[in-house]
Length: 314
Image 1 (cartoon, rainbow, N blue to C red):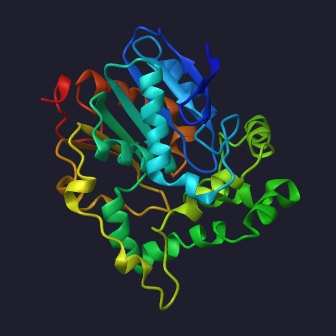
Image 2: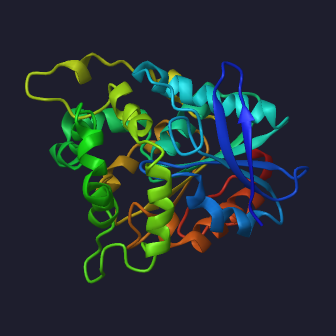
Image 3: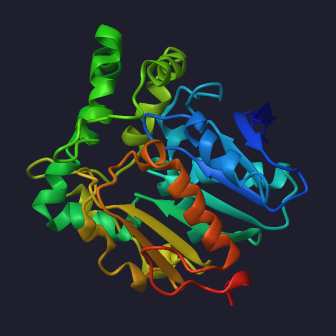
């Protein structure tokens, strides 16, 4: 059973949350990406609810959560501070953070900040910031794959995306969900799922777009030296918490090359590769996602992965 509630954070930000599991169980926070919302985790958190207290917020700017008007309110530091405040509100001595897409970017930022309550990280198809920066600087394939980010920063992006029953929004799911020999979005992008997305998007998508506008890490136009000026010191982005990365290998927006060198930035790393799954793996294979997370948190071997850190991260 899914519970819903709002959490008022210091500073006036409200997070609308979905949750399952005993409040006294170990806490796991689930962070969604673009253009999603907290409901994407429903099947995952219900499978994990027997062992964990699972809480999935609508991130700042999405759905029922607060949507500040200013672009500056959507920096990664600001969003990560929401997650830190949420963990404190839930009175967690220890917690795991799971993030997909932009939620994964937030999870990387939480991991780099290394709050005392953070026990483990799980990242689902979200590149480590240092590796993504290097790819956008030097990899033409990733530059082309990420060029949509610049479209989302356009001042008319919101108007274009909501037109014709969100036609361009559906394109993110069907375009990034294509696998050879399979209908894009087949099996999960049903009319009922579309209705849930319509309900979220009709509350406004400006906040979701502001994540892209606030981020300096996106493909540069010709002659733009912005990316070359960004500095990400190794220690500022190093992850010391045991980390599981679940990587859908048919993600056409984020290439597998983004995994190369990841072990240089994460001290205790497990990578689970999922062939043929796309960027929308949480929708496509929620049972696999839940079972893989469960194995990792329990210290059991993870399918498709190498060495798994033992319980407690030692």
